[in-house]
Length: 509
Ligand code: C2E
Ligand code: CA
Ligand code: CA
Image (cartoon, rainbow, N blue to C red):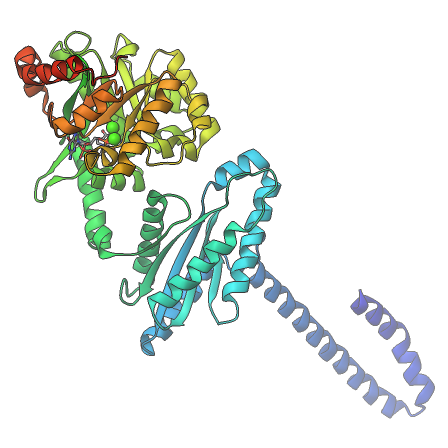
């Protein structure tokens, strides 16, 4: 606009002005030439300034996250790459921390997106307060994911202290309409000790953050070669697992469960097994966690459903000698948009759905409460039994338990293990039993390894038991043999239970 006004005034009046002050025609021609040149020069300068500002604005726009004004992921990677090169030349350390707001999806869902956005901005400001004094890189790298690269840190401990403090301050933020405490998980990886290049460093921090998430809300996990072995072997292991799923290289073991009073078989739990061609048997905890992180878990769930139902039906066990089949499912199975339909599809080959029990952990329920609740109600309507696994390790209150349409809870093995010596464990188990009785839920005690533990569970009214004392997990042909030999196999235990009942120690149910 200024340029337009200036141009018009210049064209209309500059010649007239010159003519009024200069009489000599030769000087006038000379001055007009200069005038022309200066017009071109001014235009050039103006164009340069405009272009420069435009480019500058465009660069900021494409390097910053619009909501929080922190670096965006693209720019963060670029800047971090050059900072790592600098750190490497100068033998400096860099700590990379990635953050993930726990429960953010729910906050967004329950409290509105505007409230979610406010929380993101508040956290960005908090990060700014914490880290901006030093020349650190702060970024928003995903919807509810943030990262900070602490440049030239002295050691890991310094970084850890800062992150812990930040996590504490995060709890003090307020979110309208959200009652639970706010928490943020973090994963930390060090350059160059954990990884000496950008790609691996980011992968290490992300892996640590995933591990933190597995530990529960508000955790900080340092990258540790234990869970990575190395990034490479982890990727290899994922590829091997995918291969095993596709080529039916996994097997299912079945562990029987028994009614505590009568030692009758009440059902079996399907437990997945992976015998790796080079590494030998891999613990399910390890490969299930890997499958969850690498997006393979629903295929694992498909696999177990298909195999267990096919095997137990073909051997004519399910619904006859084996009254119930329990299958473990993951929180991620319930996070899928069409989770209920997915379960129905998995059950296409099972005639009577009431033969199936789904075992899901407390965290699976709590992470995504309202949605999981809806899914569970639909499954219960379809006659599927529902069980809360590893009960006692999460935070379920009586209130939450009351709202869940479940049939049973399984007391976590860790409480049963030391029940003979540990007063606290005894109290916990008694409390869980009392709570479950009041809600009319069946209770299964798992990990029962000796008669002392059995005695305690019997005395306090635990309906069912599972553990090495009665039977270890076994393959389907072993299971067939086991059930046909059943009365004899449990004879000693039956006598033991009967003797307890006669002494009045066993609680009647
Ligand atoms: P979980 O669901 O709590 O399974 C019970 C675990 O306790 C099994 O370990 C079983 O072998 C073990 N166990 C049973 N009785 C005893 C005992 O008396 N003493 C001891 N020390 N252990 C006993 P496993 O098979 O290693 O499975 C570990 C976990 O892996 C399972 O814990 C479950 O969370 C997960 N998992 C296993 N199979 C599957 C699956 O098909 N899908 C999913 N999502 N998770 C699975
Ligand atoms: Ca289980
Ligand atoms: Ca369990």
